[in-house]
Length: 402
Image 1 (cartoon, rainbow, N blue to C red):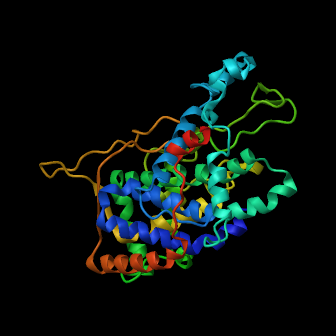
Image 2: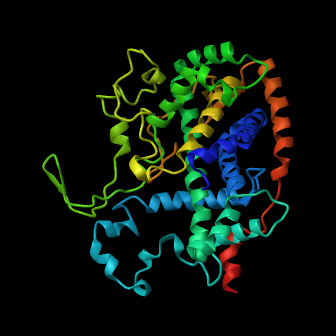
Image 3: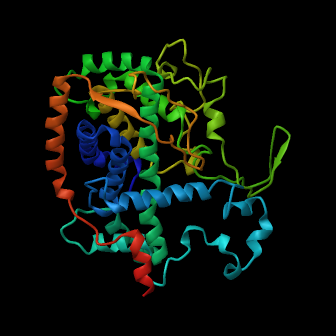
């Protein structure tokens, strides 16, 4: 309903414009590249969910919501900490809620009234000046399915959880790959210069003519997948045996995406970033059971529902940034390149590189002019989604308790 494969094509217009704004912002504040990526990802899902874009990276909804989503990712590692430690020690789940704070997780302290994302959705529905959005569709369908406030809040908030932290983390990994493996950019620049040229940035219509750039995007998704244990859990409907192991009926089964994407059989020298793995007839290509060549979004009927949205946004943004910029290691006081660590990542269900410095500069003056022109036009076209919420997560629940 919100991010299905048929629906996401309708989002290409504003997704493309928001990507142009990222390039525009990087011209003026390249050191804030992580914040620009977070603003972009949050704005796209905010337009889809609530009909309103996020214009600046100082908007509290970015820092607050992404912080919560990152905290949720930390809590969701099975066996690591509460509440997921109950997977290792099931007896802990038998304690009553009032004496088991570990069972409350992120829901702790939600107040007596409306959950936060319910309030955001209700605000969007009641504002006639905002565009049609997912929140309005949810409220239209709520009576038919007898949805509670908590369920409406979860459906609305899931967009942020699935689209903001994950998409921005993928783009940060892209920057790290460019810094660590600069030799991979030469083919991409040649292809983009031949197909696109310096006077405009890539579009979705160029995708079929950019096989190496598409391979580059696939390798970003494979090399350091954000969700390292692979999408939604599955469970067998009956006892199953696999290589001598019994998997009892209804057992939580989750794939190890890191292991799958780093198996030497399909991906020799797996920690080397190498887009040629996905180039047809390349000697580096190996057979892979999945059609796409990666399992970043899980598999089966419980594959991530936002896969289509994430893939098309990642493609257009990476294609535009490679076209527009040189992305290189930062220099120290002596003018020498600072090394980057391709293993220095956060520790959680979702991961992203820990902070690192880099240099992001336009490739030439013609491209700079095109980025400026397109960025200003994109901001004008996106103005239809301008608006501001009255709610802040940091103060909302305290007010609800009054």
